[in-house]
Length: 462
Ligand SMILES: Nc1nc2c(ncn2[C@@H]2O[C@H](COP(=O)(O)OP(=O)(O)O)[C@@H](O)[C@H]2O)c(=O)[nH]1
Ligand SMILES: [Mg+2]
Picture (cartoon, protein in one colour):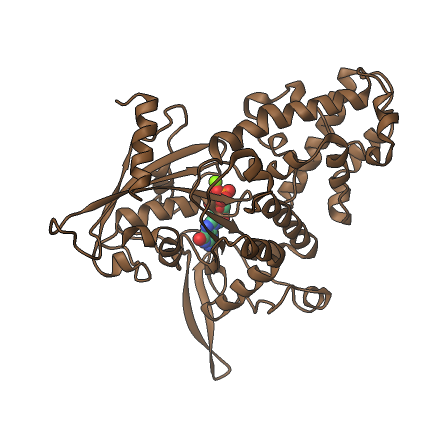
C-alpha cells in the first residue's frame, strides 16, 4: 500500500510515461452516463475476444489484450457498480441499470501491445484509465458558480408555459415574501420546499435546466438550511445599495447567505475534487429524448447545455480553468441512444448535435481543443431491419418495449437542422423506449462505442 504522497508521485510518473489517463464522462441526468461506462468497461474487458471494436485500431490489429478493474485511488468513494449493472442487463427479462444516486469511480488497467515493438522485443504495456460516475443533477450546478445571488436569480426566470405551470405554487408563495423583512425560518423552508417540488415535477416531465441540482438529490442534506433557498424574482433589478440596506437578518440577506454557502461548501468541493485533473472528457447528450419530448423541452435542453458548455469553456479565462486548472486535451460530444433511429438517420443526428452546440463548438475551436462529435448507442437495444412496404424496401427497427411487447417500427426522419415551428407542427417525433435485448454471454451490443474509444484513448494504445 502506497502512502498518498507516494501514490501521487507514482501517478505523476505514470502520466509522464503516458500510461495513465483520467476520463470524465459528463452529461445531464438520464443522458446515458451509466450505460456508457458500463459498456466501456464491458467492451474493454472483452477486447480481443468477443467485443466488436473494429473502429479501434489496437483492437482491430489484435493488440488490445483486455482490461481489468483494480483498486481505485480514492478509497472514500464507492466503486462504480459495474457488476450490478451487468446483473440488471442479464436479468430475465433484461432491465436497464438503476439510476445513479451518488458518485462512484472505477480504475481500469488496459493491457496492450504497442504498434511498434520496442528494442526489448515483444513487450506488453499498460494504460491505467480512471473513470467516474455521478448524478447528472449535480452537474447542473456548475454554471451556478459563475454567479452571485442576485445574478443567479436573474438566470432562473424561465419562460415557457409548461414549465411555468409547475412552479405556480412556488410563485404564488414567493410573491408574498418581502425581501426586506426579517427572515422567518419556517416560511423560508416552506417556500423552498415548493421550489423543490417544482424542480421535481419539471424533471419528471423531461426538463433539463434545473438548478440547484442538490434539491433533486439531496441525500444527507435533506432538510438542512443550506438547501432552503430559492431565487427572488426581480431582485436583480433592485439597486445594490438598497438591497444591502435590508440588513443581515432580512429574507434577502438570509437567502443570499445560503446561496453562497451552497456554492462554497457543496458545489465547489465536488468540482474541486472530481473535475480537476482530467485529461479527456466526453459529454453525452440525449438529443433524441429531447426531440421526443417536444419543443419546450428541446429548448430547455439547449439552454442547459449552452450554460454548461460555457462553464466548461476550456480557454484561459474560463471559470473552470480559473478555479481548478483542468488540462483537458481532447473532447468528445456524443448523441446517445442512437439505436432509437434507423442507421441512415445517424449522420443527421450528428449534424443536429453540432447545430445544437454550435456556439460552444466555436469557442472550443478557438481555444484549440480538439473536439469530435459523434452518435452512438452504448447498449444497443434494437436491431436494424428492412421491411417491404407497398413494394418498397424501407428501413425499420425491431426491439421490445419496456413491458416486453415486440415492436417493429419506423421512428421517422430527423430534421436536418435545428427544428423550427414547422417541424413540431408537421411531424414532431415519437418513439417508444426499448428494453435491453436478451443476449448470450459476450460483449454488449453497441453502436460506435469503438469510435468513441478510439477518439478518447486510441492514441495511447499506439
Ligand atoms: N435504447 C437505448 N437506451 C439507452 C441507452 N443508454 C441509455 N439508455 C436509456 O436511458 C436511460 C438512462 O441512462 P443512464 O445511463 O442511467 O443515464 P445517466 O443518468 O446519465 O447515468 C436508461 O435507463 C435507458 O432507458 C442506449 O444505448 N440505448
Ligand atoms: Mg447514471
